[in-house]
Length: 162
Image (cartoon, rainbow, N blue to C red; front, side):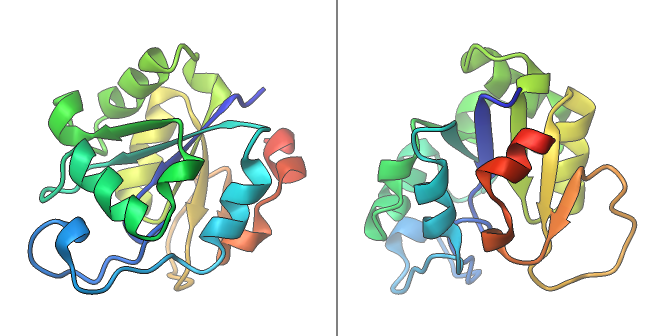
């Protein structure tokens, strides 16, 4: 049974415009459509965690960027590769998060937009996975337990079925 939902940050929760420097300092920041609504649905039902391998941002920078759109309020834990000492897609990135959250990997769900970085490593670590394929990119996504093109396709009932 899923207890913890781990979200990727860039292009899963907030739009990554690919600008220079940390997102918290960008002139423009935005939610991904449907992200806030999904987090509102999951609030109270699951522990929501956010994790990034962003090169320009540590955990504090990520929190600052999330706060600009008031997304920080939906997450109980925040992790970055700078503090974890390992990057996605290394399965240790995910297994370390599960351990720090006091969860077994099979009770964790990873939701991310990059198959190779977010889904493959999470699945190798034992997580359930949902690929957020916003642009409907073709490819072999067999390690994803579910593929959605819009975040509003994800529901508590759907997560329970995983």
